[in-house]
Image (cartoon, rainbow, N blue to C red):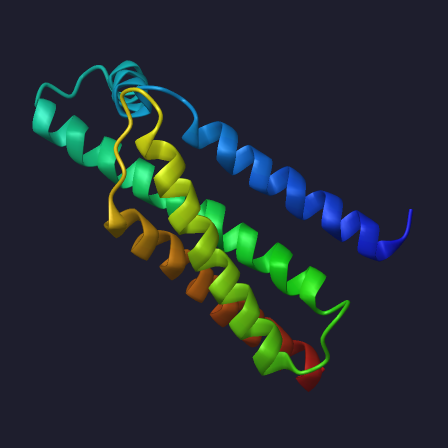
Length: 141
């Protein structure tokens, strides 16, 4: 299979995975229950809520970190200027995060908050920073 087509398919599959995660009703309470089962000895519900919150926000960061890396990889097939590639990838990450939050507002038991868009975009920024560090190390060798 051609490289461009593979990259398109991987990106689309990843976007679909994010969509599926966002389409889960009442996912906050599900994560909370899982944390309670994994850490049954924690007696303080507030600590479980903190752990639950942290896991959920790290999931946002991770999803969009990967989304941005995949977008960078695909964009390199069409664009040669690195700054344009990184800018387009970050803008795509931000716009997809906005649409994802809107989608969540339509799912029963889910909420839509702009802070999640910010967290998603930070995941994209961290992805770009990691990419730049990788390229710098690779070119030194």
